[in-house]
Length: 122
Image (cartoon, rainbow, N blue to C red; front, side, top):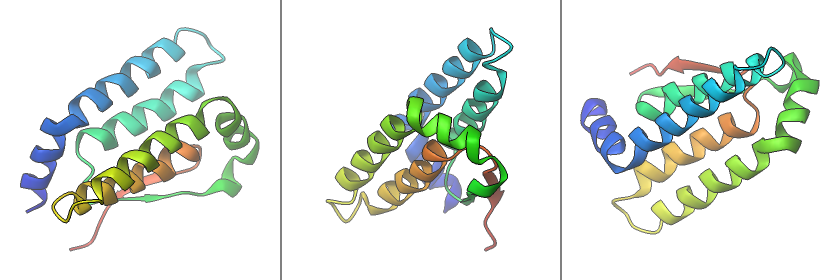
C-alpha cells in the first residue's frame, strides 16, 4: 500500500517538489556558508520523493541557533506552504492521506537542523 501511495504522491507533485528542493540545495552548496543549508534541502528533497512510510523526528535542541536562522530566513514560508497544501488536501476524504504527508513535511520545512527521517514500523 505504501508503494502505491508513494507513486500517487510522486505523480501528483512529489517529483516537482523534490526537484525544487534539490535545486535549492545545489544552489546553496555553491558557497561554503550555504553548505549546511543545502544539506537540509537534500534531506527535504528525499522525503518529498517518497514520504509514505517515513517518520520525521524534529530535535530543535540539537541546533537551536541554526534552526532559528532557518525559520527566520525561509522556514516559515515553506512550512506555511506545506500547511496550506495539507489543509486543502484534507478537505476531501480521498486527499486526507496526502494532507497528512504535507503536515509531516511542514515539520521538516520548519525545523530541519537535527531532524531525522526514519522508516516507520509496520
